[in-house]
Length: 121
Image (cartoon, rainbow, N blue to C red):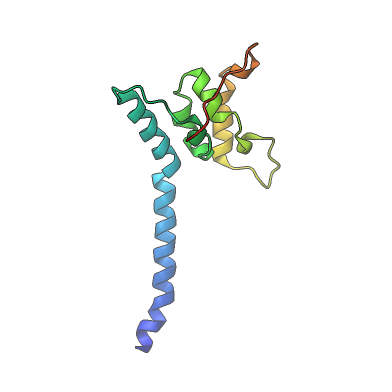
């Protein structure tokens, strides 16, 4: 019994590290965005894309979001606080990559009439 207790902490630490590494490799926000966009594209029923929900995902989802039409992309990224001017303590690679992806696309909100975004359900 004493030997089992001695092994518990190292095994628990290794399992926790493996779980975190697995989540980092899977990138759940990107998977969710890709899955929701593909499901809406493949649907024969005119189901909209919930841009409000997609906008609540982290910047890890932006590689999928930039494939949306400009008005839907604007709705999904309109309220993203993660793309603000970060100080060096808040900087991360995902936000930097998202900024680069959006840099080439002109903002739709710069047009004369604002894009109406449906509210999330």
